Length: 155
Image (tube, rainbow, N blue to C red; front, side):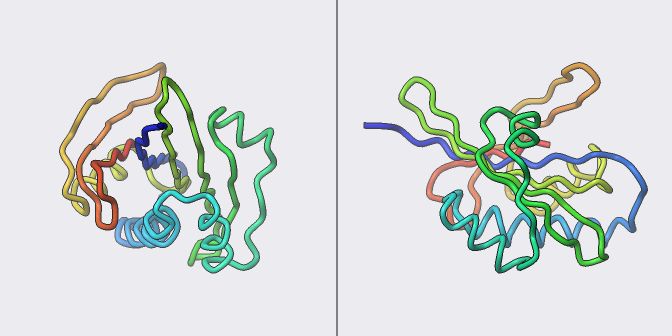
């Protein structure tokens, strides 16, 4: 029997700054609509992205795998301000454990902002934090609505 470990991931890249409230609302809207509502089911993921943005464009496999070898699907979708975002889903199998992920990439969210959004809007505790090269990573763990097992959000 294959075990299941659910993982939800989000990343932020700093660039031109949006208003903090708009950025938070946008990220939460995408995360809830696509990552949360799909319950990490890739079949539902595709339909949910199309409902979110019927003009979303699929991300080429080469780009997906450059971001992470475990990514299985992704879309460029429209943001409410006319910009674009990237949302991906992934699957990893190792040692009898199946781990699914969903990631949201918004250019206007930096590390500190993404960390604050997660800390302020989800009942999670910091599980780990570290630096890898120039990247900072913070991992939160806890229960999210609709998921029976503890989940992980990494920033």
